[in-house]
View 1 (cartoon, helix red, strand yellow):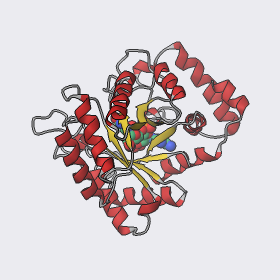
View 2: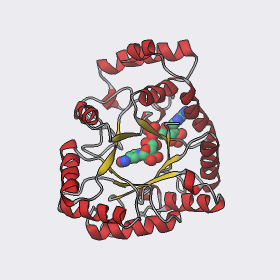
View 3: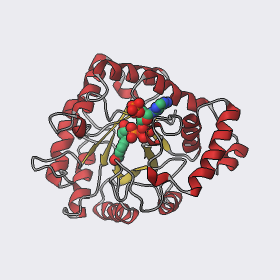
View 4: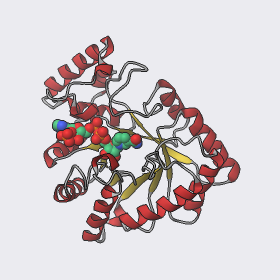
Length: 303
Ligand SMILES: NC(=O)c1ccc[n+]([C@@H]2O[C@H](COP(=O)([O-])OP(=O)(O)OC[C@H]3O[C@@H](n4cnc5c(N)ncnc54)[C@H](OP(=O)(O)O)[C@@H]3O)[C@@H](O)[C@H]2O)c1
């Protein structure tokens, strides 16, 4: 199973009972990898602070003793708002403190994959790399990843890690989908300047097969199948029209929703889609994508 379960709204927009049902079903279907962040989801909480998603995961893990060793739990640091409203950033002090808080909320000894959630150019990169490396050295974290950074900064951080002899980032978390917005166009809710997969990302990954790509927001909020969720205006260009035509013909021939073909297409690329779902019905649809198995001819049609 190459799908990751995104838990961004667990404990805020998605109530605890539904969150538990989604986690239960995901694991029952063979899913093992969960994605959260220390800041999920501050914008949905009256407190203006995150932590609800990790706390729900912690209570679910406590209710399911024995599951923990089978799971990969990924969380992030860097975006939780400080009291003055800005992102907390990636200083050594923040990384060390927040790793402790996340482990406490999750109720785990170690975080399986710890992400730098977004860039912090006000902190020296060497300080960030050393702080993440120290967490791995001390056993608080098993693996490191990086989200919403330009490729050149990822490579710079990995070079610094090699020089310091500490654990490097070995995973990227970025957004893309079967259709893409016009270059430079603003996509509402996607405010990370370097959040999108680009041709440069793909080239970098080809040169570094040891680095995984996790794809966030893979279904563009459900736009492929939902009349009530039109694609944002930034997706309005001739490339989208022709790609959606090819996608919908294939989905119709296969008698599956277009969104399932999109997830299968991402997996066929060797990437890990992080699925966001708010009902068991939506989760079942995502899980069904695992059974599609696109043929080489179909992949050639989709490109
Ligand atoms: N690193 C980062 O900066 C970053 C940023 C964003 C997200 N993420 C990660 O990526 C995960 C997914 O992000 P996302 O929620 O933005 O993903 P998304 O794929 O863009 O949207 C998920 C939403 O699409 C709708 N949907 C999904 N499947 C559907 C179906 N079968 N039928 C109808 N509607 C469907 C649901 O909307 P409704 O719930 O409204 O029905 C669902 O909540 C998050 O949980 C988080 O772990 C990371």
